[in-house]
Structures are given as structure tokens and as C-alpha cells.
Length: 582
Image 1 (cartoon, helix red, strand yellow):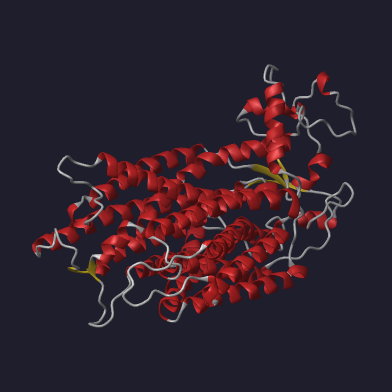
Image 2 (cartoon, helix red, strand yellow):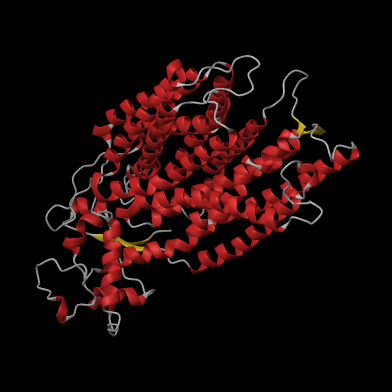
């Protein structure tokens, strides 16, 4: 961790850099391998191994998913406020390991699951209370562990690169590409190799392999401790935000000072939360600036820390402003996840109704169509990092080629085309079904499943642009002491996007129902519906969302930060340069 020595800006030698990446990526890869390998086929485990009714199994996984989407907020809070990112990841990984181990043991040991169904038996024996307790405890431990890993790993990895150091050659924008590439490869392995092992070899190996991998990743991650650049926690960020809000509300009737230089500043007080640089005053949201106006009632004495519920520094006020400014951009990412979520629902149903044969004896599993999404995403990341960035850099002069806001905008545009194309493919699918008299049938339609490849690939390309841009945005624009919390916002956007998909499907199903039993999204036969209308509705919503995003991006104010120039500080007592991070 960088530390200020006396009042100057001299800093001690720090670790970090590329040498730490294998340890960090190993942890993330194994966590994703376990999570995705677990989630993608868990409905089969619950119904075939524990003999759960389908509705109960679906609700169990839904509840688990909902819990998992909330725990990153808890993990991020613990990392930023008390434990730091390294120890949060370590403890969370151990908790996750315990959950995976207990689940694997329940799949291996016969007395921890109900007996297999007997031949000819229609109703199988369900798991008893003890067996279900082990399942639920394992799921809860998995959700808690995942909540500590998800928001912290990506921020901890980015912490290893200090862009204020001119000698630092690797930039954080490149790290985010690597991070997402590693994550994508892990997901690809999970939905192919692990699912195949679970279906053909057995659940003991299917769950055991990621469990063993997770164990070794924890050992590797802890082994890299001497090399890491560890930033100490700086107290609860939520408390600081609340203190600024309360102080501003208390002074709401005060007139604003004529000169921002008169607002309260205290570099010594802010030192633990401004190691990378001090946030400078901005002219927006002036009502919050009142929290930094010194009045007689504050009982402020020079040299003493103020009562932060009455008086705050400019830096702390700007922290709150930064979080508020990020809100609209965060919200814009929700609808892309809503569009992306259709791959696991209606696109999957489309694939099931089409000809999936590669040979006479082998056909592609419908769930494996997501391979095209992951492959296109990985290809796009490699193309972006190796070709697009160097070319764009010549025109823009930016080290990262294009800004993260531009990158997100490109992702939004491509996602619009993904759902637009999906609607036309559905028309083609139903046209072939009608030509062969299969509209009222559940038989496979003689149209190759590869007609769906364009929409799957477009979603993958859109994710490579938008999701990584979203990650860059949260890390770069969040106050440095709140970066784990910012990463939690990324995962929360994914959660809200999935919930928005559920709400949209429910509303469309309800309001598109006709008196004759027709529906855009029928329950029994997709051929009778109007799925293309649903896709185009999402397309229109995404167009409106793009307009909203462009307005937000145009109005967005990048956080102004005064960073310490290490080249200067190596030769002088102190020095600063003004940076406006783009």
C-alpha cells in the first residue's frame, strides 16, 4: 500500500504488477468454473438426483440466484470498510470451498441423497429434511462466498496497476480485457466440459473437479500475498456518504460561499481515502457543497478533527457527487442484461424446436448454443485489445483507444441489432414450420439451428464492448476507497436486468393474451406465439435506452482528481499534476 511519509509525497516501494496476475486470475477462473458449472445444470441435479418436483427445484435455484445477487453488496462493504480486498477474497473463497465440498460429498455419499428411482416406479422418493438441509446450507455458503469474491477480485486485480506511476507500463483498461477473457474461457469450459462430465460420467466428478480446482486456486492466491499491492480499508464508505448528506441537510438554509476555496479541506484527515489523489471541487450539485461550509455552530478548532456529521471536506463531498453521477450510467446497463437474458429462455426454446443434428447420430444440446456467445465474446476481446485499440489510438490519442463511455455505446448499438435479427429469425422459423404443417406440432422443425448463431454471436460481441466498458467505468470513476462497492454495483445491474426480464415477460404474457387463447408468449407451443413481436419490443426499448444513455454520457462529468506524480516525488519533497480521468 502506498503511504504518505511525513507531509511530503515520498512513498515507499510497492509491489503489484503483472507478476500478481496468475494468482488473481486463478482464483477468478476457478470461481467462475464452479459457479457456472454448478448453475448451468443444477436443475438436472435437483430433479434427477434429489428427486425434487420441477417447480420446487426452480424456486430453489431462483432463491439461490436472488441471494447471490445481493451478497456482493455485503462483501464489498466488508472489503472497503474493514477487512480489505485480500482478506475478504481469502475468507470468501474458503467459505465457498466449504459449500462446494459439502455439495460434492452429498453427490458422492449415498446416504446424503435419496435412493435411485426403481425401474417402473412413477413417484421417486424425495430428499428428506436432513438431505435438504445439507443442500440449502451448501447453497447459502456458496452465495456468501461468491458475494465476497465477485466484487473484490476485479477491483483487487486492478489495484495491482498504479497508473499514477510513469514507470507503470500496463494500464488498467488492458487488465479489464484480460479479466473478462479469463472469465469467458472459464464459462466456456463450464458449459461444455463440466456439463458433459455431469451428464455422462456422474455428478461426483462433475462437482468434484471445480471443487478441487477451487482448493488449489485458494492456495495459489494466498501464496501470492508477498507480491500484492494491498490497499488498507479506510472505514465505512456508506457512513461517509451518509455524513455528507446529513451535514448538507443541516446547512440547507445557508447561502453558498462566493469562492469554493473557502470550503473546508483537510488533507491529513482525507489521507487514508485519497492515497491515489484528492478529488477536486466541481460546480454541480452545489447543495451538497454546504456540507463543507464552516459555521460557528460547528465548534471547529484548528488542528482537531471536525464532527463529520456537521462538517465535511471537499473530498468527501465529491465522493458523494461521484456516486450520484454514476447512477444514470449504471441504470443504462440494465436493459442490455434484459436482452441478453433471453438467450437462456426463449432463444433456448427456439433451439429446442429446430434441427440440431451435426450428424445422423449426434445433435447439439440446445443449452450448448451459448458456446457461440462465449466464442464471439472472446474473439472480440482479443480483436479489441490487439487490433482496434492500436488503430483507434492513432486517431484519438487516448492510451485506451476509445473511452469506456464510447465502448459502452458501441455495445448498446450491437445489442439492438441482436434482438432485431432475432425477430426476423423467428419469422423464418415459423415460416418453415407453417410450410411443413408443424405450427400445431411439437415435432422438430426442419430448419438448421445455426440460423440462431447470428443473434447469439451479436450478444457476445455486445457484451465484450458494453460489459467490460461498464467495469472500466465503475472502477475508474468510483472514489478510490469505494471501488469494491462500485464492482458490486456492476453485479447488481446484472441482477436487476434479470429481474427486469422476468417482469417484462410477465407483463407481455398478461397483456398480449387474446380472448381466443392466443398470446405473444404461449405456455405450450412457441409456434403459435408472436415471439418476434417480443424481440422487437425489446429492440424498441433498447433504442429508447440508447437515446437515454447518449444524453447521460453527454452530460456526464468525469471526476477531477489531483494525483501525485511519482516521478516528481522521487526527486522532490512533493509534486502534483492535475488529471481529469477519461
